[in-house]
Image (tube, rainbow, N blue to C red; front, side, top):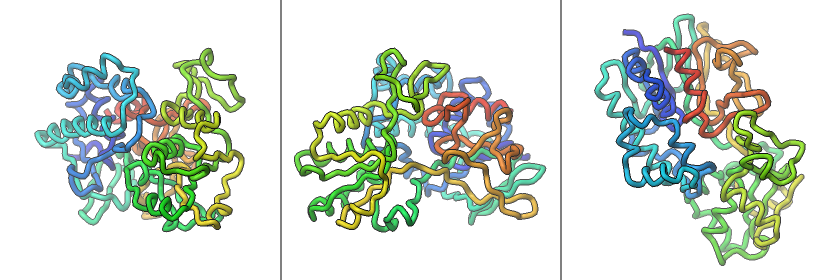
Length: 388
């Protein structure tokens, strides 16, 4: 039997496809049609998506509202901890807790696929290349190859590489991802040597890193120990324009929710950290807006932490003749066709190829819908509508 759908990656974005199918009453149809998931991790024991030592960037409701209460994930929702979340859906919890919950959802999907003759989740299946043809897509790895009519890239993103002009070799810097996963040996070493910590970037990750450093090394940071470089002042999230500070020219009001900077503004602890720095209550942090050249600090021995954003992780893409294809990008995100929602090459949709998750944002006017939109929003629904 021909496989209907292959998914590259088994992180939160891939979970969103199964959750949306369950929510829409199409999960069994999806499984019956044939689903093959290719995950590069060696085993499920290594599954630790979003396990960062910081608060989530949004309330727990954003991780719960898309899950059908009487569907296949119902047992996960009945846990005492999750019931407390449901009673107070606007609370913000740590991403470590969110990750543990998502892992339980992933286990449900694993169990489901184990009992389905046409569905499988393969670990230790890194995908090196994808070949597109009229009949669908063949994915290739050192494990072999597999073909399907449709393909979804849900393989996440990686921290953006620093360019040579940004003054630091990769070996001389830390990624924000490593810092937020608690890999602190280089940080400890730098502080013991009296070196400054230089955070490059104005993203949510950047100010999450600063907040993490302030908490992790409380009482051990001298004045100016942390330097933060941003090209421009980060946008701030607000529930509505009515409760926001005076709006700036670059602020975006979401036409659906009324939120200010819904997908691009600092929230929660990251927002609080920026405001504390600006208020002068964090003497160990100096904020530099308008300059993003780290070289003066690096020349004095600072340890650079790269928080300049993420880029989608994409396997090599070939056409039927074996010629390399480059997916269209805009603002660091892969472009989707506004009507079919397929990924694009040369301004045209590539039939049957979809993407979801970080780096694969949906665009609505000037708004890039990023973050947990793939978990409960229209992204997964659009893909399933096309596939089923």
